[in-house]
Image (cartoon, rainbow, N blue to C red; front, top):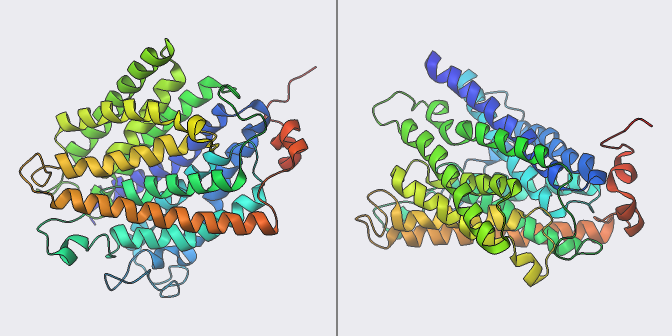
Length: 406
């Protein structure tokens, strides 16, 4: 790796790491004032725990030697003692993806989860779900080799994590929301975000960091500056799809509720970022804009499903990350450059994208439900009702988000 690639790789790693505090701000502003510390701590807890697990054995599990292996040997290089300097940079970049994927799940169980139970879930889920799924998608596993297995002329496209990050986290979030059940007084309008500027700040940090998230691999794996680099396409699509998703969300919000809100703009931006994640290197900018506006509009409607179906996904992880991840992944089957159904390819790309999305969704949901259910039936996952009413911050952490002077 030359000095330019190395410098960008380190910068991109820092950008993606910064996204997890961005999630903490975004989620923290959306909950009630008595839950903001709990909400942000779940992101920081994931940051601490998953980093350690990734260095110890997670990176080893994220690559496989045969297509149908479940995961790599966790003890093959325990503690990363044998990687050279370039390898360590790549491993650290991968760690930041694992961290934010786990942190995203926490939004579904806001206001009612025990911190210790969350940490146990985060450690087990990252080990048995994220690390293997990363191997399936990017480390030579069955999803990466699915096109070859079927004898197709193309392969699954997931540049930066539509399946491994967003569908993975969204499916687990739905499972945990079902395990923990509804908040006290669950109904439409149960609460308003306690700090909208914090939500906007979090969304801005996420958008900022997402340029490292999507374009980081172009340097980390030695591609930046080469003739086949697509970094320019990646960054314009990361800008365009996100911007278009804001517009799509706000139009639906205005038509549906009569007002376009700042929280809607922030949520639309995140939905657009989610959708462009798998597709950033394989769409022409115009098709990326269409993806963005479509995703913003659909996700603005999808977040209403929890009221109709009765699952309490507190901060709309399902409606934004699961739905947005599915849209971005499957959209490639139609509009991926040269291989999409409408752009010169046959049905092969679409078949591969759907199978990959469904495979990760089902596996993550089932395993997350089992882990969450086991934790709930042993040590308990949910705080007591009286503690929920009093505020999870004081009951779990002994702190208040806003200690106002008398």
